[in-house]
Image (tube, rainbow over all chains, first blue to last red; front, side):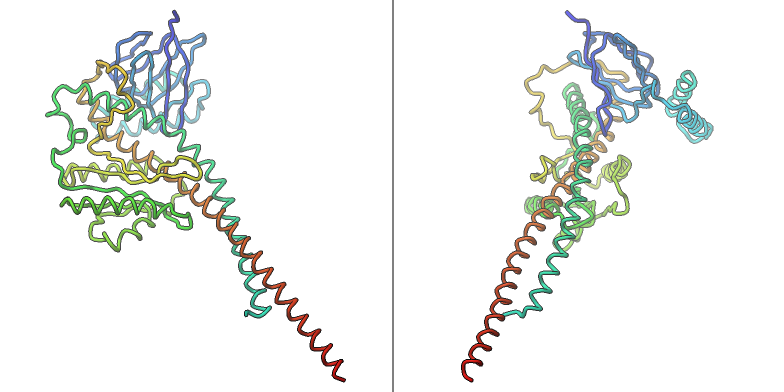
Length: 128
Length: 292
């Protein structure tokens, strides 16, 4: 029996990825989460972070937000932004960091937003 | 009988019209390819989103406390209709088909004694609806200056709808748009987006899952529902854009062909009358010579 399950990453305008994987880690709202085959059905949100897909090779995607559904050995990630880390542009990242930092320095944002932005900056810095 | 000169002028004018329609067809064909691609790529997202929501709905324990956006306001009095049409004409029956479907529905709602509110997106639909239902239109959007409609526009409309819902301005929201089936067939459709229609046609045969939620259901629903509405509106936009181009292409193709037929007919007429006049002149000359 194969130890793999299918993972799909779908953006509003296209299907970004559809493949099999041994293991996937996702940055769920309350912490990093590893998913293996036969995980119980799950619905959760994502915070900014990295999706790691372990197959023969490891692929990593940077995402800003998203919704995850796991059922019947199908992992479905709906997100508006998923960027393949190997194709990412340094300048683009820096612009993103700057944008987030100016946003976080404003006092008007809520705790939740602050939490999300903090994570975003952290991940962005860790990769660049 | 039109004179030779008149015929010549008409042939020329039809030919130049043909050139225009041909050019429009080409443009529509090029745009169609892109729009169709977008529509087809956008489908999985909205479908899956809808499925997740439906699964969530299934596993809700107490419907009483579920978010209003999901179960509705509990009343069935005021209908908000969102009419998505194009901003441009010359695309065959595209705009009229949506309006026709919408008008049938409007009539039924009013007959049943419901209140009707209409938001139009795209100027063509507004123009067609306003004569009959002008007093029901509460808002109109037009994205004429935008080259391509993005998720932001869908979000804008979604926010408007949700704020109206929160003010208890309506109980049900229905979306009218053209579903792109293929280049020659577009099907006008009415889709209810608030509350979400509980159609379990697709997942009926599958086992229902007991999901683990993180954070809890309510929070997920609260965040997911508005997103779903924008997604559905965005999907409708994409389908509409593809349908518009498809419809325009077919219409312009027909127009070009008709113009060709007309040119042929006029040319035959022109040649006949030219020959007739030559024959007439010959007869005159011959009979003149004979009488001498």
